[in-house]
Image 1 (tube, helix red, strand yellow):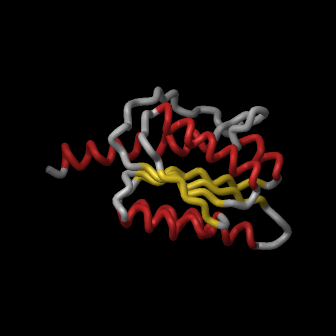
Image 2: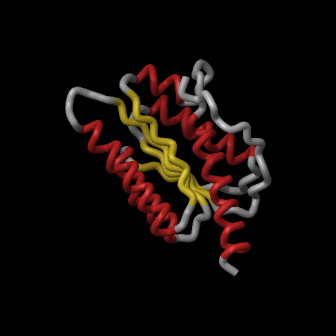
Length: 162
C-alpha cells in the first residue's frame, strides 16, 4: 500500500498562513475528491480563507503555482491526476508537472504540496482521491505537507537567517 510508513502528524494551527490550492479539471470525480481532501486539511489546520484556483489540466499547475508564489502565498497545494494511456503523453505531463512544481518551490522558497496522482488506471486514482470508498486521501496529505513545510520554512528564516 502506498500510504505505508507515512508520518503520524497532528494538525497544528496555521491560521496565519496564506494558502492557495491550484487544481486541474480533468477527471472530475478524482479532482473533486482531491480538492475536498485538501480543503478538509486546511480547515483542520485552521487556515483561514484559502484561495482555490482551477486550471485545465495537470500540465498547467506549475505556471499558476508560480504566479501564486509570486503573490506571496506561504503555501500552494498543487492537485492533479495523470492516467497512463497508450502514448508517451503520460511521461511528458508527469515530468513537466514534477519539474515545474519543484522549480516553483526552489525559485520562490515557497512550500508546494505535491498532490499530483500518477496512476496506471482510473481505479488507482479513485483509490487515492479521498472519496468515501478510497483507501488514501492524497489531497489531504498534500495540503498537510505544504502547511508543515511552510511553517518549517518560516522557522528556518527566523532562526537561521536573522
